[in-house]
Length: 116
Image (cartoon, rainbow, N blue to C red; front, side, top):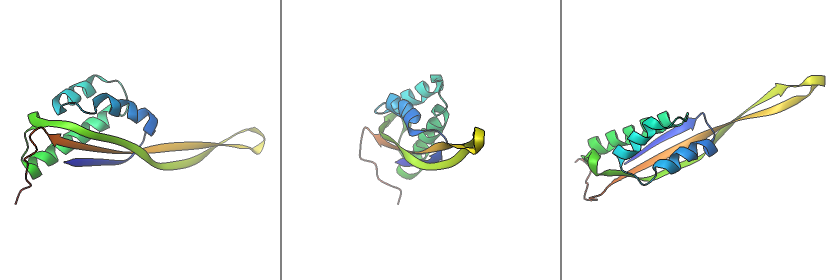
């Protein structure tokens, strides 16, 4: 039961702070904690976990109470390169770093079978 978010507009270093907070916790606890966190990446990660829960319910007929966050990885995405004009005709590079986020859920009872 996986879900992906590609090219999230925040650096992986800042996004990993939230990922480390909820990795290994039950889905209900993780969603409750994400409501209280005041960080930009908390809302997209919450939406991503809800998407993974919906995938688990529809494809594997899993209960939300049994699910926990097995793995949550934040990897480096694309880098958007811009330049800031400076005095005397110089330019200062600006790098907008993006993140790829992957969440993987698993049920405590691992006897889930996909729909036939």
